Image (cartoon, rainbow, N blue to C red; front, side, top):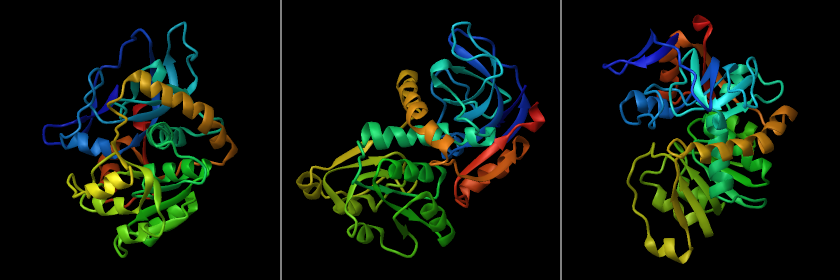
Length: 321
């Protein structure tokens, strides 16, 4: 089958490899589309290897049709599904533990299905399970026009929260507002910590971190939770412990990829129950920026490296069928 490998020169190469073999408790999926995530870029750079047991290749989510399933499975060959992966999603087929496979939302395309698992699982994990976000709270989301940012904004609004977010351009501001953001801060022209003080924060989902994190904590409400999910803005910050203690702030580190299949499966069941009906109704929409065929995977990665996307970048697999 066709799959994208990482060369010793850290290039993405479409290659022929053996198809996955049947394994107990696993579903084999014929992949029609796969989502591109920043973790894939880090993996190409040698900084974020796949967890044990997963192919050492990029690709954290996919959508397609079931090729093979155990007799006891709720899935059958031909079913339309999407899945959360630990790696290897840029391939014509993947083998996935059943608990990480979901039926596609009704009427969703494969491209839309491939845009759902990673960002909405991350949103559900951090807003609901960790953040405890509720109606009337104020959420702060860094990088609101990213695929993750747009998912977080939509879920937060569904939960009844006010949303404050950052962007880097007016075009991205428009995308964030369209998703439901109430306050949009252009981080290139405005002082983010000062702007946040006008909108005290209960829960923050921070994919940037870096130097401004400490100053931003000044804008937290008492008992607020600041959840760091990535460090795109840098790995170090100076934090005032006086503020930290006086406001009873929780500073939390969180990643999805390193969690157990059981933990991920629990989150995915929450998506099926809470989010899939909203997608079917059109209340929540996967936001797609661009779609590339798999043989243009380098172009797809360049979009994320240039930070020029407003929404998800998706790969499709016509050359692999």
